[in-house]
Length: 179
Image (cartoon, rainbow, N blue to C red; front, side, top):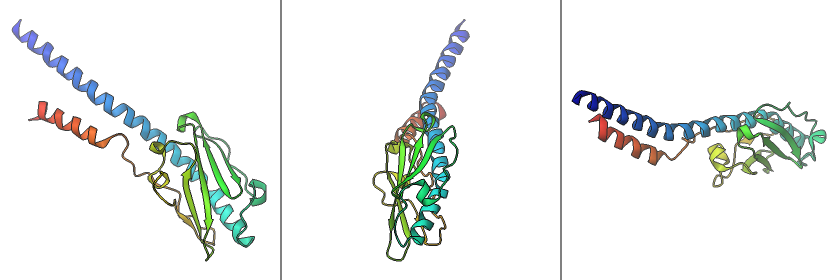
């Protein structure tokens, strides 16, 4: 009977540890999947960036007014991206609820040599879902040369969640059970 009580306590401890790990892992995974879907939208917008860059170069620095003026045909909606549109040279990526239910606005700035710099900090999508290059404190999200080549689709370097808290929990778990 004494051994049975010991086994039940061990099982309860294991259940608590699994619960703690799940409370850390599940939200981090959900944020990760949303960030991956946001990156899909930025990839889909690369054709629009190239079109705006080429149109601006052909029209001597004048940004296209809309999709028609740029000669841009937006891609079909996906489960993550509801639309991509050009308005006064700015590209607006509208995301579905699966991808954070917000927008990222890519704003071009034409440099003196014809180079185009893209800023992606505008829009309603929360920073925690944006690639690190599109969060509030960063200045640009890549460049387009005058030739129309795209070198700034955006990457995802965020770790998701609060890594200090995760490390603290992992340290405590190691201290309690791993020594």
